[in-house]
Length: 302
Image (cartoon, rainbow, N blue to C red):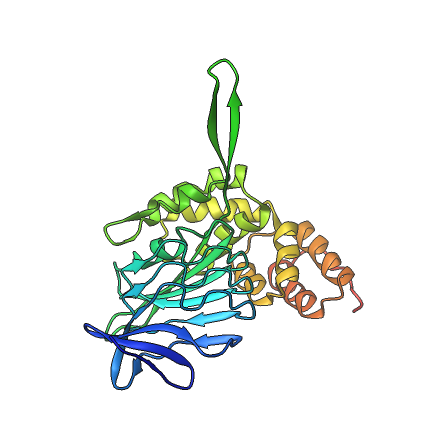
């Protein structure tokens, strides 16, 4: 089997198309083509992109079916990955030591998002997954999910003279929420109370904001649970929006009318303190819309 080389990729022909074996450069953004030499790219071989410490984004093609072992091993700056539902194999340690990977986008047919389970199985830190469900003749629908961090520890049981494994965080349980080729959304939403007890505020906010802003298969009862939690954690939510510079998330959640007048005033004061005029503007517009008929509103100077 002869290996070939183009300007960027080292590759070889395999049954059904092309296997990429490596890369001749170390880009910041890597876009793997859907075809090379007129043949579909169906595989990426073991260790193909290992050690690219400057790689921040990787975009895999729709044609890809097989991702080998340790493909992105030690890509320590990798933050974002995009992939498609034709991917049916992800090798051992494909994302080992990719500790910055925090965003995955998967384009999938309805009921065919199981590729996501393969992609996140070795990712133990917080990772946000956007699933874009595409079906011919219909508008794409987005689901936004947070899979929180988890880690293992071993505690010695002195009487039994054994070490017992302990798992911290709800992330492993969330990574099991798949059934019949897709995300089990009811099982996913059912874990929220546990996440609120065990995970970081950032992860819990990720659940609530993601499910409320993209409510794919979200039941009324589960929606109310998310809304109730978000309503009682308004300041934490605002701080996280400011930290991520995400006024669009604040705007979406303000549309749900979750915050009372006192909370709103406190949030405006915080946004002023942080010198974030865009956030102040959104909150003041919300204040005016919701409470215009009440007592005279306090004036704020930017």
